[in-house]
Every structure is written in C-alpha cells, then in structure tokens.
Length: 308
Image (cartoon, rainbow, N blue to C red):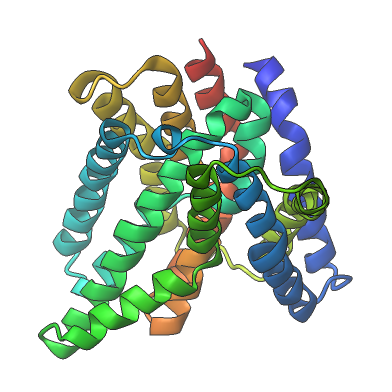
C-alpha cells in the first residue's frame, strides 16, 4: 500500500496546493470559479473527446459492467435514504444525502488519476461509471426534489433533466468521441495535437480547482459528514465490488477500475445542486471536505487492494 500511497500522493499534493492558495486568499473564489469553468468546458472536454475517440463502442458500452455499478450504487443510495428517513428528514434532504453517498469526483479526480495509475485501458470503465452517474443519479436527484416540492411530477421536469444532460460538456464530449470512433475516421493530426495539449491542462487544473474550492467549504455537522463520508469511501466501493464480482461476474480488471472509481471522495457538483435547490448545502460542503481529506488514505488502500 505504501507504494500506491506514494503514487497517489502527488495528486493530493496538487489538491493541497489549491486548498492553500484558496485558504490564504491568493486564489480568490472568483478565480476558482473561472478555473473550474476552463477545466470543465475546455480541458476536460478535450481529454474526453480524445480518449473516447480512440475506444471502440464495446469498450464504452458494457451492459453487465454498467448494471453492476448501478446495482451496487443503488444499494448504498437506498441505505443512505433509509437512514435519512429514520432521522425524519424530508424527501429532498434524503435525496441530497443519498447523492453524497454515491457520487464521486470521477470527472476531475478519477479520470486523470486512475488512468495514470491503472493504465489507459482503465479509461473505458471510468467513462462508463461517469455515464451512469450523470444520466441516472444526476437525473434522479432533480426528479425527487421537484416531486417533493410540488407533490407530483410534470413533463417539464423531464424536459429540465433532458436539457441538463444535453448541456453537460462531459456527456457531449463522450458522445462526440463515440461518433468519431464509430465512423472509423481518425482525428487529423493538428486537431489531435490540439486536443492533447488542451487536455493536458485537465489534470493539474482540475486538481488545483478541487483544492481551491475546498477552501470555501466548512466542516460543520461532522457527525453527519462522517457518516456520509463512510458511506461514500467504504460502503460504496464494497457494495460495487460485491455486485461486480458476485452478482454480475464482471471481468477482474474492469471490476477493479469500477471499485477504484467508487472509492473516490464526494464530487463538488453535489454541492452545486444542493446550493441551487437550497437543500442542506452546509451538510454537503462538510462531507466533501471530510471525504476528500480521508480519501488520501482510503483511495490508496482501495487501489492497492484492486491491483492485487
């Protein structure tokens, strides 16, 4: 595990650098916002297009793999929801806490770190995890919050969900890359070089942005944040491992990538949703901070385990 810890340490050092820059005021919240936009809309999109364009359709669509990840994640989602209901929380709060329990930082942290540590063959499985998160769970939280507030669902909420997916640059980038792959065309060298250079900014930019955004997060309500971090860092990878290896019998390597991706800390976009809908943003903020700090050890442990 020590060797894996040393391999993951540079990634978390970049996060720490961003955190220190944000905490000292050297990097303002406005600067963090613009850096995040650059990474999200440009650098990460370029990386995803180039990666997915070099993969076959079979490498990006594996139904048993996606089924295993969905079932394993849904088990934790329902468990966290049940605990929230027992604590007498409303549907909207329960939905947000459940989202915290299963949505990891796959885009900003998982893609650059896991593809480097586990090899380029890990890119396809990582993207499938990202697709399930974006299409299923990101849609589910909007539907549940809307339904809890209005007492019913209308076609407009599904339109909102659909537009959100169409406007998400990660979904668009993967689809564009898949279309290029399916066409059999190769990306012209100047464009490929452009995507390579731009995509290279995704890893340091994303990690620095994660750290800088954490500087504005508070560690209030640590008991709840501790429970949600435990669900995300321990229960989620364990449940996904059971679904992949026992229920769906996914091949060892993609299963190991799936489990490693499930071990990632809580994603920042959960906070954006919580803040947008005004549902427990402080609780989500604390969970992101706690899970990211603890993941320095837990992610290394999980990656060491899956590599064995």
